Amino acid sequence: MSGNPGAKLSGKTLLLSGGSRGIGLAIALRAAADGANVALLAKTAQPHPRLEGTVYTAAEEIEKAGGTALPIVGDVRDDEDVAAAVEATVRTFGGIDIVVNNASAIDLSKTDALPMKKYDLLQSVNARGTFLLSKTCLPSLRAAENPHILTLSPPLNLRPAWAGRHLGYTISKYGMSLVTLGLADELRDEGIAVNSLWPHTVVATAAVRVLFGGDTALARARTPQIMADAAYAVLTRDARSCTGNFFIDDEVLAAEGMSAADLDRYRYAGAETDTDLETDIFLDT
Image (cartoon, rainbow, N blue to C red):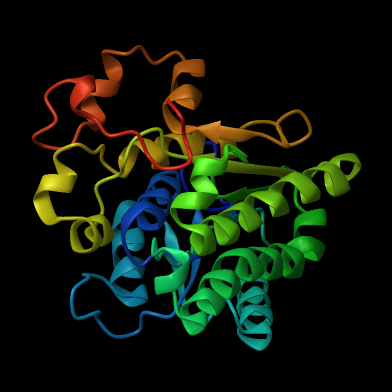
């Protein structure tokens, strides 16, 4: 065992899809603070023209935070890339304790405006990628002491408005959530926890800034740290008793004893009160 003695994720190994920036990186850094091993499977080997961070800069941050990083350049849509990533993680760290399905493509276009090439991208990254990475890690998870799969996807809200607003994207995100629903039931007797986590409010990431209106959108958001802290709370729970849930970040933290006033720490600069925060999509309240 390596890492910080007494820390809940000390010596644990996470394999996370995406994670070059944003929520995925925040989750990785929270685990790294415990001395965890973090393998990142991401496509971003070179900087994006409008988004900061690569798999290599993320790995440097993980090491500085106290973890051990394994940057892996690959595509979660590609069977061979995923198999190679799992093999490299097991070879480097001896196993896999936690899988975080963070990689996700987004396009909120209406049906007429969504090219089929983009539709296929949404389904292959989001639904297929989540299914593929989870499936490929199962042999390693079965050998882990407290195995978890955590997917960043919403509750299955079947109110028609959510499909009507952005059908292609909704299908892809609900596909991720169906992986949680199905695998939790399928793996329950094996003691592998399978859960989803979704933010109550918009989260301030570079992608939100680029896609949804710059700093104006961020002023009604919380920081990625709220998702990182909520993910940490879920991933350190007993796998046999914590599975099949569609968690909301601030509800997880409230269950951990955090008060409404405590949540103020997560407000992005400019959001002065809770009423200024914007509820995320797929949530009715």
